[in-house]
Amino acid sequence: QVQLVESGGGLVQAGGSLSLTCAASGSIFGINRMGWYRQAPGKLRELVAVSIRGGLTDYADSVKGRFTISIDNTKNTVYLQMSSLKPEDTAVYYCMASILTSWTSTHAYWGRGTQVTVSS
Image (cartoon, rainbow, N blue to C red; front, side):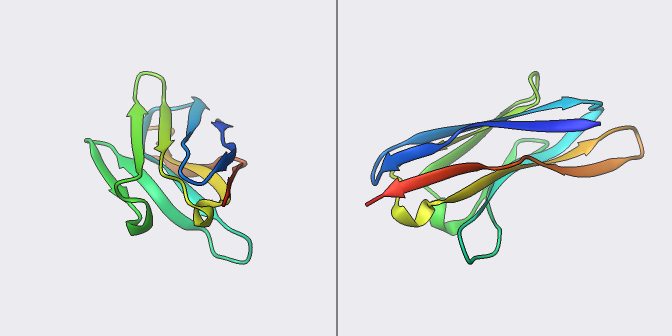
């Protein structure tokens, strides 16, 4: 069994910064990718940023240049540094991980979500 535990988030004024952390624990053989999604009220969940094994990263166009994703493979932890925050960044942010639980088994796991609120 694998668990993702998120921390960080909260309330910040527009232009401010926040950091999110997500740690994976449990029966982890390897990690294919870890990243962050977000869901604002009345909207679909969308990709924010992802870190892919091998060092590749990808970002939503709306956060490029403002958010930075990084991963510590020794700790199975992914970080999201958010700066120049805008009210439209307000959402519940979810950690996602694609994890190998054996040589032949891969599963996607989700955290419970953490609220980020940006006031104008």
